[in-house]
Length: 302
Image (cartoon, rainbow, N blue to C red):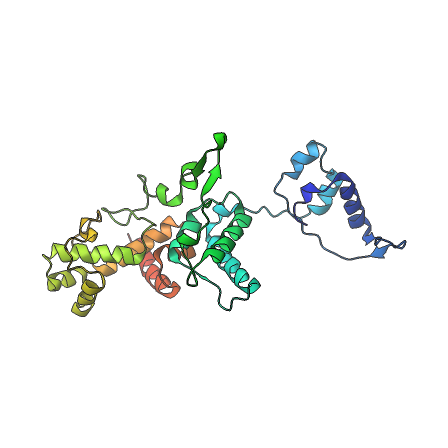
């Protein structure tokens, strides 16, 4: 029973009697029918407050509230957002006869996880349904979000974004005291692992005067790997913004060191919720758990 607090007083009396007696009288019949049922009800209102105001029967409250399960808001359990979003996308595909449900991109998932969801699960489901309808190419990206996403009405008819209404998780990590990768850099959830990898290779290449051998040795990677990264990340373009990035490369740290430190920082920033960190980093679960196991061992020894 959803929103049980909205029951009219007359219906509250009928419900209480049915639960107490274990029988009902069907419409158009004169004989009562026994029934055996368990009732699960929900309400976003405080029933005790309604009882004090005379809007909800106290005897019905104690009848239906034998076991209470407080449900935290969606922003208090952000690790559930990816699972719910994927389920809603799958449901949309099934309803509309789509054989393969749309894939949710890492960029969109990050937006979903960082949003505060004042409308909770209903708002999330509606957002995913609209995104599915607007998606192109079988993938849900931030472009598929409805124009109203992240905005709410405030006094005077104006609107403000979710970030203005309440600090987002990513912005809070930009403040002093945010999770640190090392003594030089703070973790930024807006970057995935490839973003970090690009700047690490670029900084190492520049520090070695653009000599692949020296850079590969500094990061402790093979020459084949480094040459591939030069091509993949277009590192021979010395005007690339990667070389102006504020990330500081520490002397003596290998790529493996950064891999473990960044994965660990993401894990801590995500409040040790692995699924959230995996979505931020945009890596596979197997790879993440393999790295985080070694990173945890190393950090516990410090």
